Amino acid sequence: MSPDMNLTHHFLIAMPQMDDPNFARTLTYVAEHSDRGALGVIVNRPIDMDLASLFERIDIPLTNEAIARQPVFFGGPVQTDRGFVLHRPAGDWSATLSVNDEIGMTSSRDILEAVAGGLVEQDILVTLGYAGWDAGQLEQELADNAWLTTPADPTIIFDLPPEERLAAAMQSMGIDFAHLSEDAGHA
Image (cartoon, rainbow, N blue to C red; front, side, top):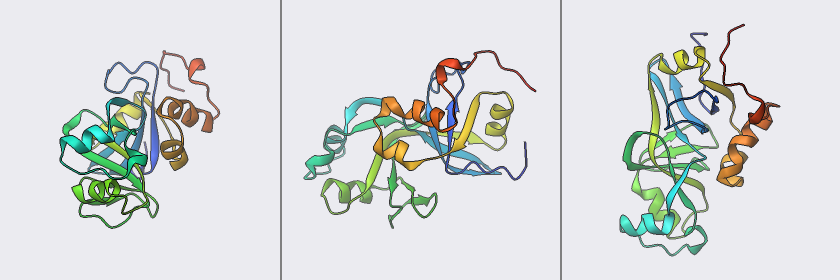
């Protein structure tokens, strides 16, 4: 592994042998990767909650009916009681990690209030929880063949149904998930 490896704005595709149930058959978007660790959100695991239900729970009035039925996602096993919003454009919100010029990840309420009120046009994916790795942990998991990586394509996140996202990310690499072996190997 290169010490200069930076997987910010990449997808992590869980390999078939992934035995952690939190990540089996997941597509994770990496919002930040540095020598201190990495963080991202799973983008293909909706939970049994939509945005209308979430906004009701957190007392945000929903007037933008166009987003009411959008699913909320399991973003990962860290801080599952807290919401995170992956969005484009990146915008200027209270607590935003700007991934790049196009995408941001926000944990503040102001983006939810603006979107719920129809005040801004944003592509959003709302998660409860996130995925996090300590320094060197993700690199070790990559060395152990737990993940495939590929540059992220925002259209996969924001334009495809959740059940199509993993296959689309694999297809962008020219790989069919059904043809991956559960046996890890090193060349």
